[in-house]
Amino acid sequence: MTQPSQRRIYVDYDDVVTETARALAAQLRREGRWAPEFEDIREFDLHVSFRLGSAEYDAFMARAHRDEELLALEEIPGACATLRAWLDDGLAPVVVTGRPPYAYAASRAWLDARGLDDLLLVIADKYNRFTGDPPPGVSVAHLDDLRRMKFLLAIDDAPPALDFVASSGLCPALVFDRPWNRAYDPSLPRARTWRELNAIVRKMVDAAGLEPATLCV
Ligand SMILES: [Mg+2]
Image 1 (cartoon, rainbow, N blue to C red):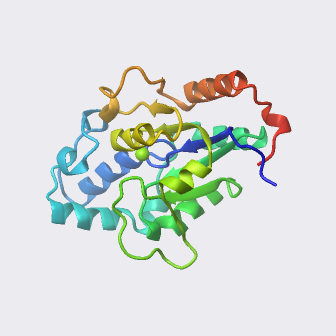
Image 2 (cartoon, rainbow, N blue to C red):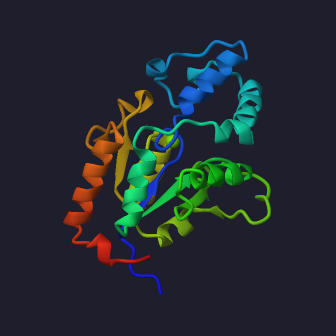
């Protein structure tokens, strides 16, 4: 039986767990294209920050979501060890990603390869942009599904996803600091590193009166 799970923690994947924007820029450069330096990516919309037209963008993102590109993504320092510690301490982080459903298998494999095979991965239609059926065995979560998960906190870097969390009343949000969200709502808590994120989450769990080590999901 599932306990009330206020301790579930929504953790975005790209640019919270993995260094995705850096990899996308590097991929563009490998392909002989211009790409901005990481600190100069001031717009989350990659059409704008990478100066790609719609057709170019779609083709590039399809290349960027190939298994070999996803599997090669670097970890943001401390992400996997912290997620491991949260799981071991009875917290329930859930990776909630807006990656396309066909990217599920490689996204799952990346986590499994880092000892996180017990970390739930959810593909969520955060931006209302998925079309067609997901691959067999892959489910797509919509807002109601996420509501039922009763998150304590959502950690994301993308202004549209943070807007989605706020406007849906899903749960409180925390901004994972990236160059493209520096102007986003300064009233929200913000973490620049996984060390800072861990300190904030541990404090929230304590304040919520949860005893992570004694709770199960
Ligand atoms: Mg992200």
